[in-house]
Image (cartoon, rainbow, N blue to C red; front, side, top):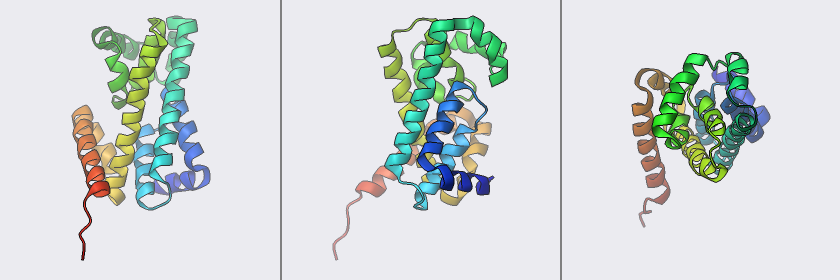
Length: 199
């Protein structure tokens, strides 16, 4: 897997990240977390620059979730039920996410990125609910930025151990992600702003 990801990033770089995330958030079966974490590892090796990696990831996720919102706003639930199975979005997932959306509303747009299978549906639900676009954008785009930075920073911090993120996600889910995100951000800020000692 590592060799394929390396070749992918070497060949397509930031454009590849942008397109992959845009399609992945819409619902195509693309391993978003794996790609993002490995991209963070690529940053630690100097293959990618962090600002451009964050920008391409954020824009890709933002475009993907905006397209999902627009589709649902126009065609609604019948289209999602018809096309969903081809995108691995089952009626059961739709029903469970609808329950979460009813309970947590726009906040699910923000945190939903960190829940595999949920982030692909939240924008559709927002569109079907005719949520105001400005409100939708505030929650979904800020979530996209946090999600992008989290996995890039985790990949950068873990280095050669980048693949452990995928294992931890499967076992510990959201709790691990939130803790790991906080740790990764603290490490990043410490390395960037730590005072230099004068000799």
